[in-house]
Image (tube, rainbow, N blue to C red; front, side, top):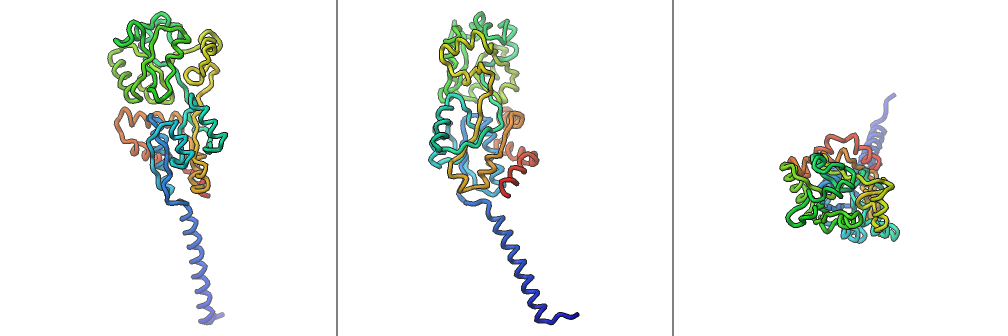
Length: 327
């Protein structure tokens, strides 16, 4: 049966219109991300592991179509900045001394908590493996009662030195020293880079060094650092409790890891809903972060290049988070 010319024209016009509609719908869906062309601003703190986590997140967000800015800050000021919408997300917040500030902000709904990052955090006093030969009894903390002087420096002699966190990281080594009655003095470091330089120098000379540090971090694995051990129900923890030390800050007598969480500006879920869902799903692990931080600190690679290489090589890990967020 032959179709008249007019009917063929009508059919063709209808088909063309349908194609145009499907194209328009597809374009509208593709254009829904980014929902706003304003940049998403991520908080960048002052340690390399956090830089890695933040840059990986930024790289994935850019591939989703978002504009991203990374804002250098520190933990406490970033809490207010995120509450005010000046910064939009913190992807690695350590809940230690600053936990009460975080809890209050959550309770007052000034920030939107997104749960754990996936990282397992711990802190303590660390020393290179060879120090055990010069201080028999390590890793038991009681060994320091007899060998504290081997950690002495010209500024602390005859007492030994504990290289503590920089002032802005809420250092508490001296509080522990006083509670445990050790002949040590806490000296604030100049930050991660300065501490790494001291550890590298000490290891090269095989000299004793004792420092407050944390995991996950490349420094522990690179220089084979061991952590000082406290008894979970004995003398050290009793002394800490008597001194009212919040033990989750350094030695956790209950054996619990430190909470490492992420949170965003409360308005993010409305302004960038797909990005919000992605950030909520995103996870970082100690096994992923450590090698990347080492590439930056030890091998001198650019942070952006390291993050891009990880994202390229690990699509199976992050693509499902993006796909779920953009459904």
